Length: 270
Image 1 (tube, rainbow, N blue to C red):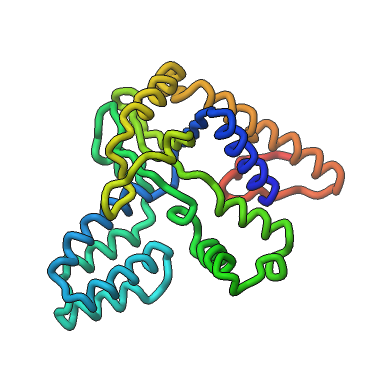
Image 2: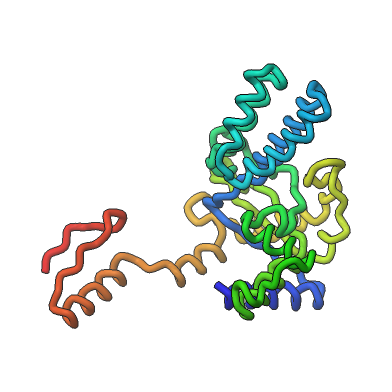
């Protein structure tokens, strides 16, 4: 993992130095950032009906909820029971706790070709809670990462904290096709301004248009999605025939029959 972080950091750093735009494309992304951002905007509107103390506590609880911390929903329901907040706010907390990824909700909406409103994201927005805390403590000088996690991991964490901002959006390239998540890293992203109180960007039309132009030229229909994605998938995916070859070699070496996990179990005769 440390090697991956270092390699990724070097690729992004050199690309930005040479004014090269890096585009990442993912299908079946587990990300929920788009839905979280929309729900956050909805929560902000609902907070106007609360007193100042409740607003401060709810925003703190909202951040904890998005990190998956336990006990948050119970506290929110207690506030609703005491009539400090409305039941609608409880529904928003329940919704943000749902781990269903963005792309599945987009599928349910049955949208045609196009793209979502882009988000400008940074590592502090998308990283796990423990990483956030580690980076905050390191910046404050209240902890020594090198002593607690080792020098290599400490350097990797520092590089993660230095990752550039990413312009992220979803796109459907063809009628009836699945949505793809697109992440763009370039010098232009750094200068993009977000809307007040959110991560949404309103003035990224040129960058999105040029990115989609490239992706559309690589699009090969619902069966293939993207010719580059398909080629990478073909190189890294272990197919069943390859798995059976390794299985047979191991069984012959150890004179034992291997039982496969349920996810890949097939009828197999020794």
